[in-house]
Image (cartoon, rainbow, N blue to C red):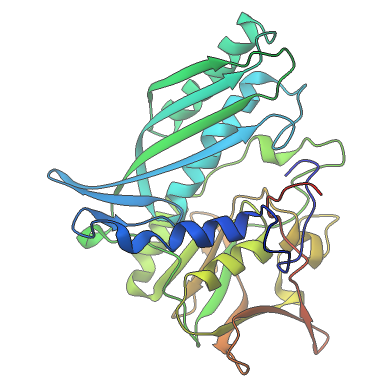
Length: 324
């Protein structure tokens, strides 16, 4: 994220922080009608059981000044807002089929800026088979207020028996793997690959088709492998340890393993596999970076192994938090 700190997991109970809010939301999942809700909050997409079949839905947002600079091309901002949500569909190995968008904009952005934003959203949705079918627009009361663009994507399961890949099935013995290369998506000036990337929709579906039941958990890398690994831990009932080998992490040029797993905004796939995954899928490299073992201290944690040393990485990865 732009101008966002990476923060440790331990904090005061009164501090507004993303992981603690997620935990509260998940704690209410048992109140939902399980006959209608196939996947409750806590994964990349939720799933509802409708009379016509299973429908997946997910929402994501771009906050101008947080996820992109205020002077970025509005068409690129709209594209990124759509791509972020499409990447969530990829994480479930699902096929998006429609999208909606809402925006809260400052009154001084101008008609041309707003229509270019819409074009970025519209063209990107069409490109990936998820046409923009509706939405909403509101204006802030104050000029210069930060814009917020929210996108909802609807998707369908495409695997046999309507199977989708969730985050919650990892266990000891699994391989940990990633697609592509990691790190450096945010240049010092705040621009870079994060504005225009390919959500791994086709790659995810192909991997799931090839591996079947051996692809057991998956998430897209928006906040860094370090944070996404912790989200997988949150979804697992038994205490496990995810062990990542520093020398195995596929880094983009100019990045070391710390930036590769901590930077975020890569939108690659992080997965847990019961068998060794293929080395590539549809021309995209797939790299095994570690394994899952039973926790020795009854605590779920992510560890990086570097030159034989165990390094705790709670300080790596992105998390939204209130500024103090």
